[in-house]
Length: 293
Ligand SMILES: [Zn+2]
Image (cartoon, rainbow, N blue to C red; front, top):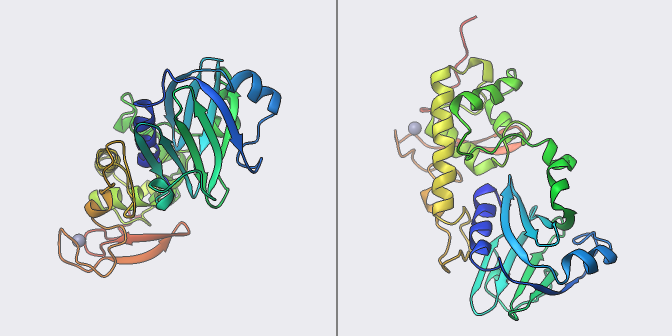
């Protein structure tokens, strides 16, 4: 599933290519992937120019000169591929990133005045692309419920702690994955940051010291930033803005490394289930500590 760093990679790549281009044509197959009234499409999408590409949590926002935005949720298998003189694709990793398009996974095709096309591909059809007035975007339910951006420049360790203690009796892994607490943290980055901070994923928030919370905050930003720098987390066919394959998975220290030695202490990494998700940890570095009663 494309997570925050992958969506950020899509944003960075598209921002180099589509601002300033005018949309000349849009086609789609299932309305589930493109739930927009034709009258709105004709009036606010066709003929408008791309102003900028932004991101909020795992959502991509393509701002248009019509004062509308295309709001894109990639969900499980969504990806965006720009094909013109240059080619850029990111999101869900599969052959469509590099193959001939449109293909059977293409849900929406946007054509530009420079003859380039932007393809929204989504094998499993859980993703969507919605046309919404730009000044209403922050008011839609989905955004209202989202917690703060972990990478925002003004988001501090103190803010992070205040977010976590809203769920003081829950385990830290569940809280990290809760999008209403902090936006955009997925399974990989939760496991990686907890390993970095030497915190057992089942530790209850109230048992975490301020020192540990500060360390977790630092580690979470570190893994997210490193992943963006490496072009996302996927370990399969992956093309980023420069046509390189994403390589974050080769930097993962605990995620999907069960049975291998912990890089810090040599103990075998194990996989357990926490918050309904496969969870990777080092049983030596990440001991489950409970505060003294
Ligand atoms: Zn270890």
